[in-house]
Image (cartoon, rainbow, N blue to C red; front, side):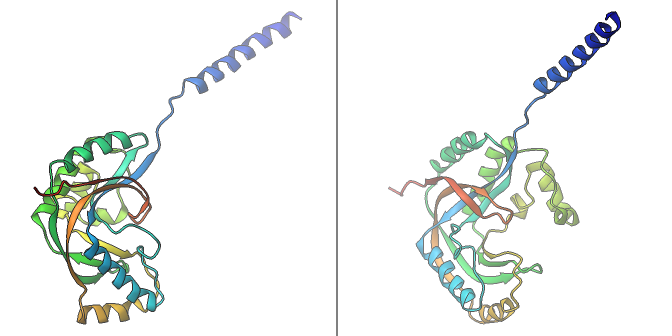
Length: 233
């Protein structure tokens, strides 16, 4: 009996310690991809709709056709779940300091990996907006986010990612409107040839800033907030 009781006591101690270990383990918040984006006016959206229709006739379904909002990314990176309210507060504050400004969409581009875009002209106002958003939101980002493999081949983008969590900010900011990603349909080449001869074109405005939970292509699975600039007095 004594020997049995002696065995049971250490066993109870081990079980208790294991239980305490699991109880005391910290719960780490998961990361979510959040896109802070510029909201374009109706003429720009109409251009994306028209270009999407041309793609659809060749058997390709654009993000617009899938119901994704037309947007120009300002800052896209991973954040710890639960950061949404702080991000909303920062973006709303920035929005109050700006007014709508002109933007021009012109041209059609296809990358080597068959991403298709409508190009946006360089805009100092859009650049400044991206810079402000990046500086305001960057402290909230998940600093443990993995570096995308393709970024490692571009030293300047790698430096930007390591510092700000995104390879496409500041001097690397190249605004665009994404239509397709990793498209497999060979008819994309036919559409591209047509678009080079007849470039899509529209003049519109950037009218606000949106915040969205993004998928792997940087498209908004869920828009969680939209803030619109004050009209000029």
